Image (tube, rainbow, N blue to C red; front, side):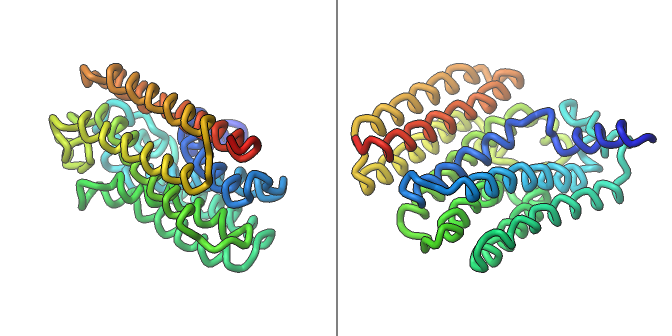
Length: 288
């Protein structure tokens, strides 16, 4: 295979054509970058963390598809993925994963030494998550921990010790991740039951939407506490109110539990992350 089709295949297994995972990892990272810098992060930090998000999310997709190579072929949504369909060899996928991890590591010398040590946790969680769905019904919790790990890293990279604000933001993002990834898993629930894959969508059963709503409510409460500690005012309150409205739309949209509607509700969380970021930036600038 010539180089151009090969690169296109790599881009496909990295899911660059579906950037929702990048957005959902990027927004919380930017929340932490801005909050830990009191609204004035350096361009260098923003660029490094943004590039790190793209690389680590891409690496996560590759190792996830490698881990699920014997399962994806039995799921309607994933049967045509490069590894499952045989278009990309498993060994080559592992080489691509290692290359992406190496590229991510190449960013670390531009940050302080403490950030390097924290990055080991990110690598461990990203590598562990794809295998959790075989053993526990809460793999989304591990995904939430992985997707939130950039938050304390952002604090450490800017010479801030992870404080109460950091861990409140971490907890908020973790519960939000469990909520939206449960929506994602609802679309595959029937196939997952057939092949023995575990998920919160299966664990929650008929209470899935209720528990998602409770997690989303907890997410807003935790962010409200962040705003209280930062003395944010009406801008932050309006921001959280808008997010509440977005969550209500998601609830109504996937109430019928149809696969397409559940997926669309999942994708809708990109708007939630963006709204929170804009509200945070404005709150830090205007302090009202």
